[in-house]
Image (cartoon, rainbow, N blue to C red; front, side, top):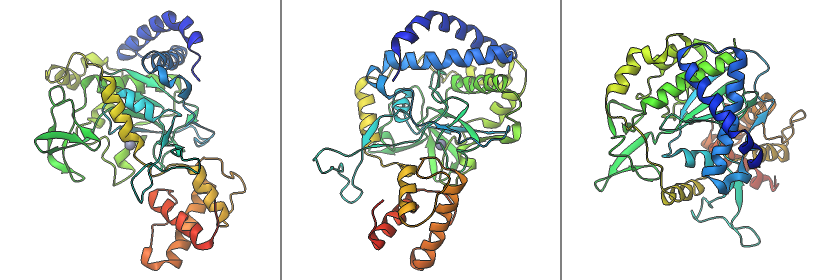
Length: 383
Ligand SMILES: [Zn+2]
């Protein structure tokens, strides 16, 4: 629960400190003290922003979807850039909150009802350390000391930032659409036709130059706060880890962004940033999405069953099927023990069901969840 009154008392002070330090991040290298102070301000202003702009969500932040102790106990970490597949930062923040959403019955595609006749609510979606809005505003949701749940292969050794972007766009009956409905930014972010289709996608939403600049500054800020933990070779994006992910896609200049993050050149002097800003296609300010659009977005989100919905449920299924988790139990964290148990289950499943073979990759995705449920039914056990 956000302590709104406590944050209000710090607001003016935080805002001034944040603005000065964020400005400086683009121009010079912050000291470790300054960077840590900036992050503390960013954390508070993020949660105060949520309290002011999404008052219904005060109880859903700070997000419970943070995983203390999950990051590998080593100094070097990866960094993963993501694209949200969403339209607004409000929708993105809602998705990364602690709110429980109704789940659909995959068989009927209607909301699943519990014994009391009420929709079954479930913690869904992943989490992320940071979100960057279309206008470059940065939100800090999970402490750098804790893990986020953004990519099963990298949750244990990567910090993450989500760039608000619809990613895949397509035309339908003369209207531009995203996976979850109408694409409202045809004027401000005209769909870009890719020179080469990217993993089956031909049109994508362009990023805003302010997002690229904020991404560089954020990486500089984190490196100043926690020196020695990031390196150019470990700066990645989601599509590096999975062949089924689009983010961030060819419109995200990741090589330039990461080179800039590790340089000491003031951002305003970077030639490609100047060119990007001068391109003229970027709006000076983005109108705030109306509440109807936000509600529609949430409605759409709530109808999606997250493929890795609840790791705890996966662990419970593993346990009733006889896979031991002596160290972690059903703790909701993807540690090496759980990954090994998932791998063992996947291999056993394939052995017993050669016509329905699955990869023994140790990743508890939707395919594995389906087989876990089937295996429980076969054996007559309930997680
Ligand atoms: Zn991603």
